[in-house]
Length: 271
Picture 1: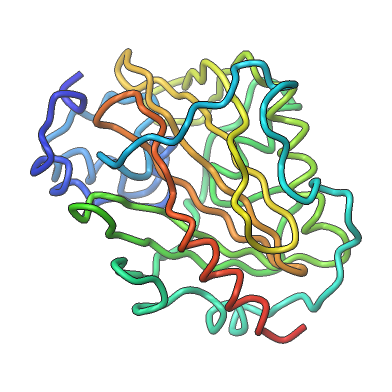
Picture 2: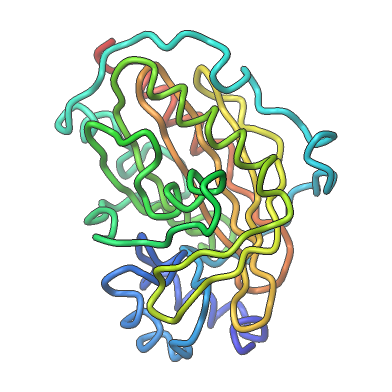
């Protein structure tokens, strides 16, 4: 796979064309991304970001012995206001909120995405599609670029939920990580079914009211591509972050400063 052999300059040149939905190869501009980067279009899992950063410590492959999410998903009663789209926009990260990172708005989730072959895995594909389950009342999307050598790209989206739905987003994902630990396939991508070989928990960020993190391992032209997701609930708002490593198979690390800064802004939003 050519994506594995590219150097840091090549990886950096790809950052400018990362878009939401590229993780499943379904975004409206995903084929344009492949063209402008000089990469082939035949990828099964074109990830949302590339990073050459240092890997995190690997969690055990057995999901039952993996680190549990901090502040157990679904265990706490959700309180707080359901933010409007305008309130989400004001609460979202902007330039200057995270030192060393540039923040830019993104258009939003693609009109279609992948569907898991098993119902218990659908929360995982829903999140990749930028539309976590249960369905949000409002959502905003951001791209965060920077870090060492400016090669870290993180896609963020904030979703506002009613009632206990925000907690259900985390509890459904938590269950899916266990149920789909051995992997699954998904349909809906323009290049045919995508194969995900496994899911495992990672240490959750210490931010917000509840949080979880996991790695989903995808296939990109026959190579393993680690996709890392962090999901943090603050009140009735869920912040999702994801990134990937197309340079090698090491687990990419999402800087803790990102989720901490976002949780702080959400904590001061209307509640």
